[in-house]
Length: 163
Image: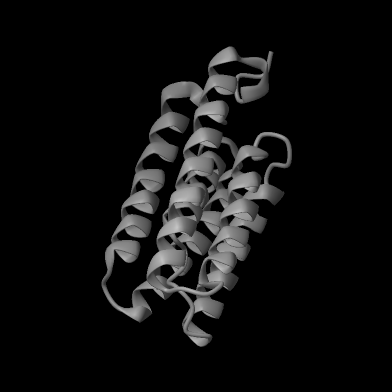
């Protein structure tokens, strides 16, 4: 059995189900809050980004490293678009958490080169988020990525990832 294959372990399934519940609840709550505060269809963009990046995070074990690359790219594109089009700030809490899961998982399981590139992409997305100023969204995105940058290597070194 491959020790980095989460699908072969019941604990990995429980983690993925828990993440799916958190992603679904967070996406619904964020869409509701955006609809009531920004009005109109402002929530639709965040809903789409949350669904895509969240789905990629849940598929991270099957499409390594492509899920991580795609998730960071989608979060980055959404962040740039939200800045340019005056949309609600991205990455919102759910895409930020999903991106952190992708980055942490990449650091834990991939070779050093690809893992470093994915981590650098995540840092670039969070840095881009800060261009719109300090808000709760920037704080959540920064904290989530910082957690991934600490937990990914810690799990790797503890034997839960690639040697």
